Image 1 (cartoon, helix red, strand yellow):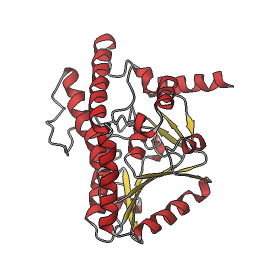
Image 2: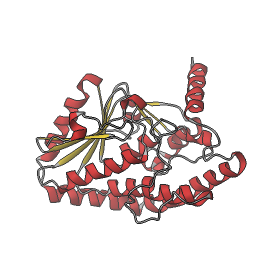
Image 3: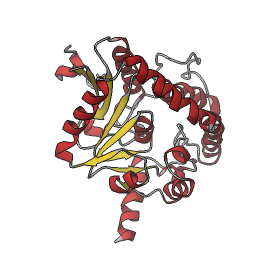
Image 4: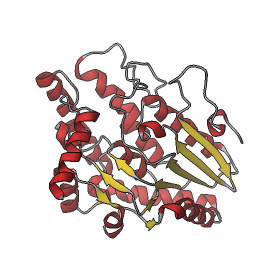
Length: 299
């Protein structure tokens, strides 16, 4: 099932993608973010390509399990905050029936864009009837957490780390606010208040991830788990996934996420009013500098 993305061929015009690779082997769809030069930062075209790959995997009778990973050193450094391929100015194929953001101003522009591209897509992916495994190495930061958290299982390398530092931007965490469901409440507060990196072993101890393995064994371990799951009946897997999602929603996951999404956009609006910028002028360089300063303090 070779595709242009899978074979690594690039279109003539730079920066147009593909940004995701897709390969099916032995009943497992390997869906890999493919912007390693930018630590797999997620522009909007990447997210739409990811949705296309998930749809392809769902429609393929041969696919029993989906693996989501990232090519290169890191799983994902989060949402694109300023690479040359940043594309928030472009129109996009909307999957959740919201209107286009491109001609809008004020707070409405980002609100409708993120309703579809962030919250909407993540909820759509969390509801996929086929099991999904996140294969995480290196950085899993902010928007990277969203992609890992929509999967049913997370298997990480021993050098992986997890971080949501967006409180520095006045934000109460990323748009898919699963923090208090993935972590105990006090740990979720620590995770957000301090914005520090959580190493994979600690994430495992807290139950946020399923397994930690040496990096050179990560793909083999994920393949082994996926092969085991693939032996189970498809309907049984789908019903089990629906059942667990239902319990999470009964515990308030969906309604609390809606509420925090609106807090998130109140913060965007406040930043725009006070600084003229959605994230309070706290761009990727400023975030990297803050992380470096924080690491120096811990020495």
